[in-house]
Each structure stands twice: as structure tokens, then as C-alpha cells.
Image (cartoon, rainbow, N blue to C red; front, side, top):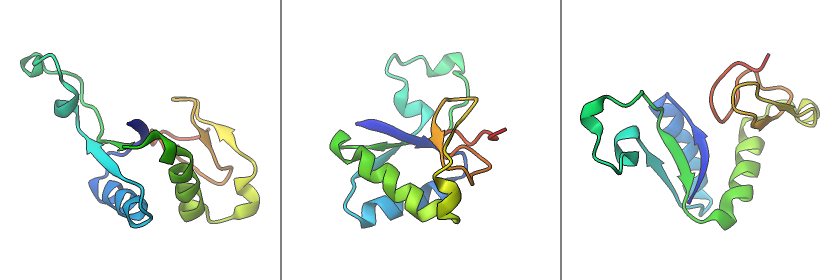
Length: 106
């Protein structure tokens, strides 16, 4: 299992998951309470956005490529990749928000 992206908007998360599943890439959406393996939910852990994971790590690169293909509107600018200042994820040049963490790409 490998984390692919975090998305606070459940509708967008559903779109991303459906796109990947339609291409045969098995995924799962994890929520903060599912990641709490110590049973410390009563301590009010920080709010975490839902996280989409690819179940088979061998599918990870194909999943990233598929998301780029689907969400990039200008292929020429996509070649000008830039790193997210918040999480370090590489994004196509025409993105205004990081596809992984949702933070603004300055």
C-alpha cells in the first residue's frame, strides 16, 4: 500500500478513486480514525484529510501518470514540473494547487 494523494473534498476524492479503479488500479481511502492504531481517538488527534492509497505499490507510477494525463489541461506546461513548497511533491507546471496536498504552488 502506498499513499498517492490527500484530498479534503470528498467528491473530488471519489472522482480520482473512480478514475483509477476504472483502469484496474485498486485503491482505498483512509481517514484519520482508520489510521489510529493505538486507540487514542479520545485525545483528539489533528484533523487529517482523507488519503487515497494504491493497494499494489507496482501500480503507483501508473496511477500518477493517469492522474497527470487526466488533470493536465496544457501538455506543454506539464513538462515544466515544479516542487510543492509544502510537501515536496512534483507537480505539472500548469497546476495552481499541489495535486497531493492541495496547497498553493507559489
